[in-house]
Image (cartoon, rainbow, N blue to C red; front, top):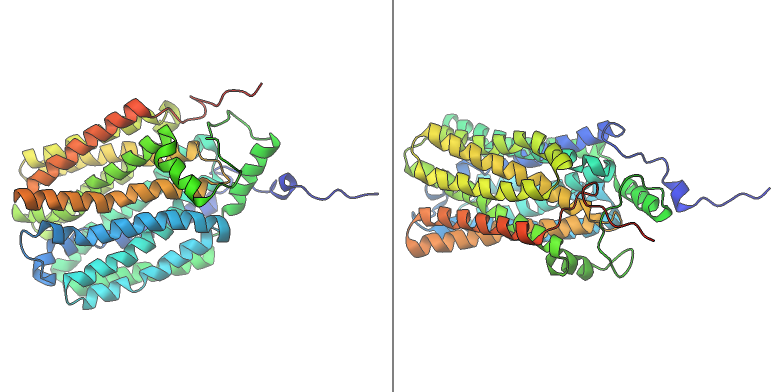
Length: 442
């Protein structure tokens, strides 16, 4: 009796998709992105607020102040794309672990840094860490969930990550008041990074086989549900340049989503560097600044628990456009009000806007990315999104320096968000496969 050689479809039948079926690994990836958020959050309050006192940044040197975000943004953007391509060759787990190894020197640099240039250098490592580690938590969740769960999955992912950012910003604000600022950042950061590395090594699984199982299902015609509108590519495994060009300018919807991701990071760059300095200049203490920045992060993070699922029901395009405009409005409100309560309200408005757009953009890119090259296309989108840190920080700093006013940077960001949302409204198609499936082949 002859034995049939196992096919690709047979090889991957054991990989079931869905949050419930993969709850253990889904939870582990949530824990990982929470640690990633804590790592970036340790710089969201104390470091910019004490840039002049601790690291010698001259008052009013807005572009120099932004330099540590510029280095972070461009490096993280590039590493997002590198991580996506690498993960399709060596797997998601290895890239995640490499990300944590790059983070290990950061607390030591903060502790011993003699000048602001060292903080800029530390943020190069932070960019690599975030590009590798955060990218893999997103990609891994998309790998193991079903298409109709992507909004929910990315919402939970970004909730955990930006919840970590908010908690770290608040915690380090209090620690810096009660203890030496540098030592508090050092201990906080080193403990988080070490625990994250150990738990990732012991518990994280590689989710690349789930992506290959999904690709096999599409190839064999076994995929259930509506067919997504995957763009045509030269081959099943397109080149690095083909993917980058597709996401950047060759595909109308991908291009609109990428520019929106880039511009929305202008908001986060502004909050990261200018909010602490602006609020400190208006008499707020480090813990009070931590509360305002923390409200922004906590509302952004927690709201994604409902905005992600909302996009699974309502579609991707409407939440993205509304989110861009609401976040821009929150920035305007910030400079029109006074007092910690009013600033917290403005921060909450901004956070809701970011929550509407943020997981939805990731889900939209995932919707129209074939599982064979999803890691790369997500990396391409995340390249442009996080390059927005660098582009935004540079432009905000230059505008503030040219006008001699920090407030000019706020107005610039608000205007950019309004125009970017209009671009999505005009140029992007709905990507949810249930609401806009690919036409049936005759």
